[in-house]
Image 1 (cartoon, rainbow, N blue to C red):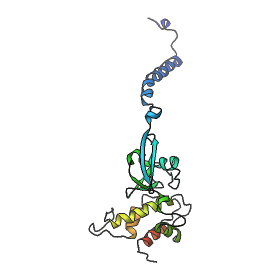
Image 2: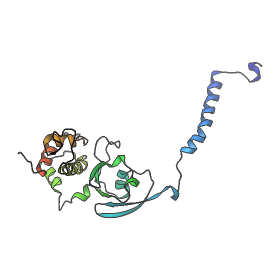
Image 3: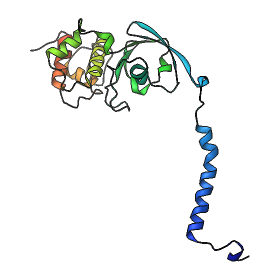
Length: 210
């Protein structure tokens, strides 16, 4: 058997044959990874958001953040990093704050969700919203909804006696600037209004030192 039996072997023919083999072997895998289409791929999800019941039909891969923004038009909750690193998408679910970009809507079927729209309104601000205004706890405002939702939950955590990494006495969990900073550390303010944010939280906690 000689090279002539198969034609001239060149670098181009070898690379071409390798590419064709790789493409062919990838076809079954790609088909297997393709999600099903149509109504069979959708699932019913019931959420109680800001005191109102919502019955939705969603792709099970839809995040809670996208459900709020894209399906319910509750755009107060912001999409920042979309990786759970900035806290802009923080909402309160069953009394606990979470990053809505890191969780799927189907995981919260039947649960209570509170967004920034559910805390207060322009006509009747939540005390934390009012404190952020009084203490100028924002600049561009993009992170503010997540900051406020997180701050409200922080005070609830302290009142419930849930310790943080900086809690000195586990039997006496009390508000302090150190506690507030630690608990709010997952909410990034790129405008660096941190001192004003802590002042707003301190005010609502009834610990205003000004």
